[in-house]
Image 1 (cartoon, helix red, strand yellow):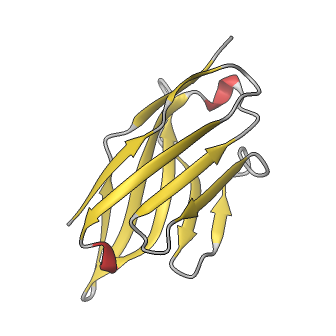
Image 2 (image 1 turned 90 degrees about the horizontal axis):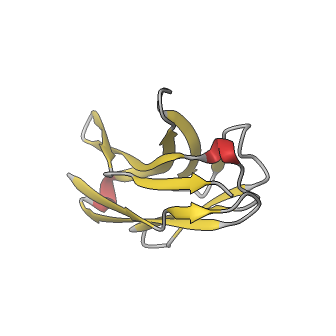
Length: 119
């Protein structure tokens, strides 16, 4: 099992920046991808960004060019640098990791951190 703790959320004005962090502990050596998702009020949770073990990154179209995902070489912390924030980026942001143990695939989630973009 992997435990995830997010931090870095808060209130920011439109056009501002925030950096989210997610610290992983436990069976981190089984992780093959680290992701960020978000969920706005009354909306479904949606994918934001992914980084794989090989360093490949993917982004949702809505954040491409504004957000950057990165991680430490030890794979125990993943970051989400968010620039040029918009009101529509307001959501609870969740860290997620995917891992394999034998033939089984697992997903672990953090508790979420609130990001509010407002003037």
